[in-house]
Every structure is written in structure tokens, then in C-alpha cells.
Picture 1 (cartoon, rainbow, N blue to C red):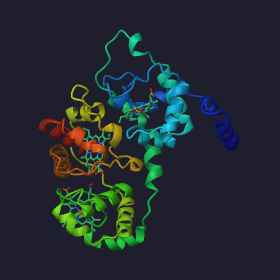
Picture 2: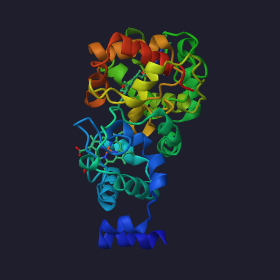
Picture 3: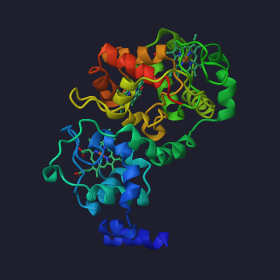
Picture 4: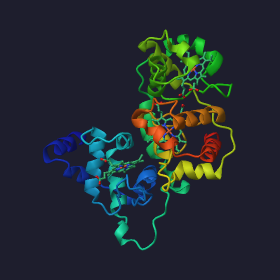
Length: 316
Ligand code: HEC
Ligand code: HEC
Ligand code: HEC
């Protein structure tokens, strides 16, 4: 059956993509929580950088998502969003957004923030699709990574759960992100005098092995107290300041998105998180592709950072 549908897609073109799978608007609503951060919870966004989706044809939405996933249409923000979506997810999302009223048909003012925490909690399934599949993908060898990790243990913990707040935990972080950081420390794209010394002698294979080893370690849950202000910013961003919600890239539970290179934040110490946000803000950390984090951090006040960090330390 799959083969038949696939052949159909190839021959008849993308229009059959919409017909191949029946969309369910209610299921789509739950899955759309991840999209709300940028496109608005009901597909009308106050942020002019992102297109409205409300009232768009379902078939068009499905085709765009399939194109972002296949790479036919390229966009640095949408590619990772579409990467984890199944045909059913796309059909459901298409059905949901198509059923929403366009901005011009609405009488009520559009809420400033996107995904409300209550909706976002239902989005677990989408996040799971995109992160679990990718977590299993790593180029390195776990066993040799473990052997090589002996010299990392004094700071990052033998199992990658750091006991000292200035050292980040590495456990459960995606292999691709870890490997990239090691390469960045080595090339100098990310600057840290301690880590520069640690990576100087590492080969590409060493970095992949270390990434694989730490990626499969179990991360400890955060134990910090939550912050209501921080949570609001994390889930909804700040449309007035142009701050994209953190949930869009780091996920509902702060587990990140492995395929996209978005790191997990859960389980990290307040000291480490504050330092990274401050470094992105003043540009001293500049290894984020397309200035993705710097563009966000530069709009955060000291108090925003304080509240966000407080909230992030509570992520389980
Ligand atoms: C981090 C922000 C962000 C998130 C989260 C996000 N998008 Fe997008 N989306 C964008 C941007 C930016 C564009 C415009 C891309 C371009 O310029 O080609 C876009 C474009 C689209 C388009 C094409 C619209 C058109 O008129 O051509 C669709 C469909 C879409 N997104 C669906 C989704 C869905 C469904 C989700 C959730 C699974 C989602 N997006 C999550 C930023 C985001
Ligand atoms: C002497 C202490 C020390 C040792 C030993 C050490 N590190 Fe680090 N590591 C640090 C510090 C400090 C940072 C944070 C740098 C910063 O603030 O940007 C860091 C950051 C990292 C990061 C980035 C984490 C993130 O979330 O972005 C990775 C990956 C990493 N170290 C891997 C390793 C590996 C692999 C080893 C062993 C080969 C190792 N480290 C050995 C101190 C150490
Ligand atoms: C458009 C995607 C995107 C959004 C939205 C986003 N981030 Fe990030 N973030 C990234 C990427 C990518 C990196 C890693 C860059 C690198 O080193 O390769 C990162 C890294 C980080 C780090 C450092 C993690 C570590 O282990 O060193 C922190 C902390 C962080 N982000 C916090 C936030 C907060 C808080 C928000 C919301 C205000 C946010 N991010 C919004 C993409 C994003």
C-alpha cells in the first residue's frame, strides 16, 4: 500500500499527498502547539516575520510541510519543524489550520503570544517524533567514547551529569550537538580556555565517539523552582520585543531537537545557563548558526534572563 501511495505521489504530484491521508483537525490542534510559538496558537501571528496559516488551504499547507521536510523548499526554521512530522501529522496540521478563521475574519484582537502552556502540554507527541528518532542516530562508537571520556569526568561527571554548577551536564544531550561543540572549541568558533585545552588533541572520530557516549547517558531532571514570568517567556516569547519563544527550538520540556542541532536545556545549572545567555547577548559566544541565539539573546533584559533561567532549571 505504501509503495502504491508513493508511486502515486511521484506520478500525480503533490496534490495527492493531501488526499492520501485524511487529516483530523482535532488531532492537528494538539500537534500545532509547537507551531504556535511562531505562527500563533490558531494560525494568526502578530509577528510579521512569520506567515499566517489560518484559513489557508489544507492541501497547500501539507505540500509546504512535505517540501520543507524533503528540502525542496528551504528555510532554516521550518526544516527542523517539518523533519519529525509524519504524513498523518502533516494532514492533521493542514486540517487544523485550514479550519481556523483568517485574521480578516476575526473580530477579537489576536493574543500577543503564541502557544499557551495549557495547549503546549499536549504537544508531547510531536516533540517525541522529532527527538527520539534522531537520538538513535550518531556516528560515533559508544564504547570507545566511554574510554575516551575518562579525562572529562572530573568536570562533567563520569556519567555526564555535572556536580559543579559552572560545568555543563552533557548527559542526554544530542550527539550531533556535542560533536559540534567540541569541533567549535577546537576551531575557536566557541571560545573557552579550559575546553580549548581539552579538545586540542581530539580527532574528528574522538569527538563523534564522545558525543555518542554522552548522548546515551541518562540526564538528571532539573530541581530548580519554576518561575511564572520565565515560563511565559519560554512558551510565548515576546512579540513586542521580537523574541521568538524558546519552545519553538528547545521543545516543550527543554529536551531540544537533535536533528536540528537545538540543544537540550533541562538539567543544566542556573550558573551555566545564565553565562551562555549573557555570552550570546554580548556576542562572546558566536557559534550559533545564522546567529539564531544571538538574535534572540540581544533582545533579553537582565531580568528576562534571570526569570528564564529560573524557569529552565525546573525543566524535568
Ligand atoms: C521558529 C519559528 C517557526 C515555527 C516554530 C514553525 N514555523 Fe512554519 N514558518 C516559519 C517561517 C519563518 C516560515 C516562512 C519560511 C519562508 O520564508 O520560506 C514558515 C512557513 C510555514 C509554512 C508555509 C506557509 C506559506 O504560506 O507558504 C507552513 C505551512 C508552516 N510554516 C507550517 C508550520 C507548522 C505546521 C509548524 C509546527 C509543526 C510550524 N510551521 C512551526 C517559522 C516557524
Ligand atoms: C577542567 C574542567 C573540564 C574538563 C576536564 C572538560 N571540560 Fe568540557 N567544559 C568545561 C567548561 C568550563 C565548559 C563551559 C564553557 C563555557 O562556559 O562556554 C565546558 C563545556 C563543554 C561542552 C559544551 C556543552 C554545552 O552544553 O554546550 C562540551 C560538549 C564539553 N565541555 C565536552 C567535554 C569533553 C568531551 C571533555 C573530555 C574530553 C571535557 N569537556 C573536559 C570544563 C571542562
Ligand atoms: C530558532 C531556534 C532557537 C530559539 C527560538 C531559541 N534557541 Fe536557544 N539555541 C538555539 C541553538 C541552535 C543553540 C546552539 C547553538 C550552537 O552552539 O550550535 C541554542 C543554545 C542555547 C543555549 C545554550 C545551551 C548550551 O548547552 O550551551 C541556551 C541557554 C539557550 N539556547 C536558551 C534559549 C532561550 C532561553 C530561548 C528563548 C528566549 C531560546 N534559547 C530560543 C536555537 C534557538
